[in-house]
Length: 394
Ligand code: SAH
Image (cartoon, rainbow, N blue to C red):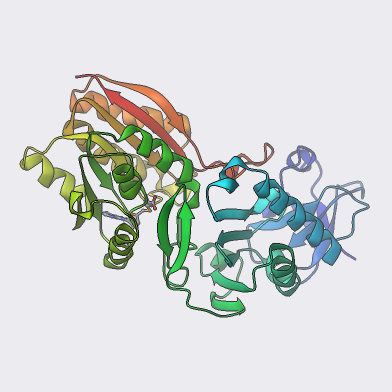
């Protein structure tokens, strides 16, 4: 079997069971992309089996820390069964037919993301290792989940870092994939798995949408970066007085309107505005608009550590204007999905925004990703979504 030998003293993170091996820690390695390699310390002892990725700075991703375990179809069967069983046991599974079934490294399957939208699976193969085992994984997924249709959305940017070309389309089965109907806590949504963002829907925000629903009664709501209307429709279902949804993508707004129509709610209470949130917040301020609840769920402003400074300015800007637009007693549910922005940094950005807005504001709750997006304790990189519920006193 191919080997990957670590430099002397560079086995610490591996011994803490971190699944990534960076190029700087590697003394020598041989193999083709996706090959399983035995990872050895400088003394030759096997510490793990990993997927080799010669083109990536993450030179290998660990499949198993058990030197005696084989990486074969049975291995993948075991990992997938475990991942799916975990989701079946979740309380949310009783309230929705849309769940993340596999969350990469945190499910022991580095580079693999699988979301279930009713009877359609959407899979992303994001690293050389899972790319090599693609066929095995697809067969096992349809067997274990009972879903015949698997749509592949291997078009994320990170594939480039692995030297992999994008691939999009049905990998198994076939059907209309531009509007997969799902139910989330009694609300109907259509998911465009073909052309929607990521795999089509932001499942990580499920419980936070529920929280917003519970807080929305009687409030004027502003949903910034609304995508297909998740928070807006939840707020309306929760009894919001009015909802203004701001989103730049016309395609997302089209689905949002269909989603609204798919629920027995008073659609006349929702206004969809196709605009840039940064500009629209200022426009609303000029119009003297006031809101009782504002949601800010922007895209990843800092895809990597290099963009953190610029991202911090963007987060501060939107939070500042949102805090100005809040009426006294108003609530701001504000999120960041940038891995490079830590919860501490995010909190200090929002604190700076409150200071500059002249708002007396307090954190009354904290948000994270839903439980179908577990974070393995040895893999803190998996903990990307953070949010604060801020109450503006005056
Ligand atoms: N809250 C949504 C997910 C939001 S994803 C949900 O629960 O489903 C972020 C959204 O922000 C995307 O739809 C993207 O098109 C939109 N977006 C990105 N930049 C924007 C900008 N400057 N102004 C308005 N919308 C923007």
